[in-house]
Length: 253
Ligand SMILES: [Zn+2]
Image (tube, rainbow, N blue to C red; front, side):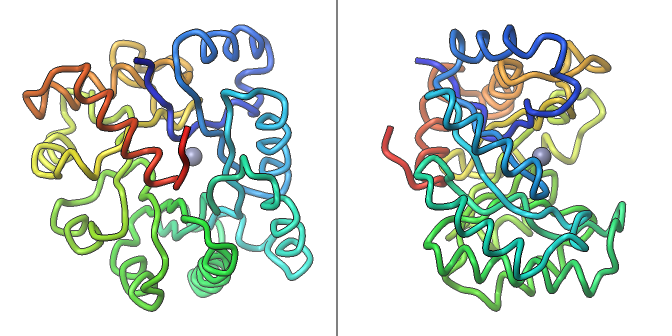
């Protein structure tokens, strides 16, 4: 069985020199990868990739750092793009109080609007949350129908527990870092039934490639680390996280 990379950005410039090789490696080694938009341009590119390759799916949305871009016009374009059945989710959306690419009030407003959009379209959401767990929880609490994925999750088990009935937690490269004690501890505690694996490529490269560009097939190192932490067989983690990813994105493949 082949793994799934639940979150990547292979449309970015980091891949422009060897794009075809990277895509070929996904085709050979993974069941599929989900390419994620974070503004209008990258959302369009993600959908184009999904149209071109049957082993690539996409998600579309406006990232909190790009919140200034959101408008009624952009929302209409997202609705149009979401008609493609390979658009699995609205995201990445959320709150980023670490980089603060936009004022917090605007981030919250754009987050709420896109949650409402996802509910209207009956799609899961894909959440980016950085240093903003309190507000993220409060906003998600306003929308009980919202469900989906916390992407590149590195928060606490206690936070995860509060949302575990309707969210999955996607683990990325940092879990492989020797000093990532908190993330490792959280993964040990989190039920395997709520865990997914992703790369967030080109970012967050796992050990042993830390410091180099990340790419979707490196999701294997994340899954192997999860298997180690859970005292499970790699094959079993692969099977369960694949199932979780398909459930989270609400697809039958
Ligand atoms: Zn991302």
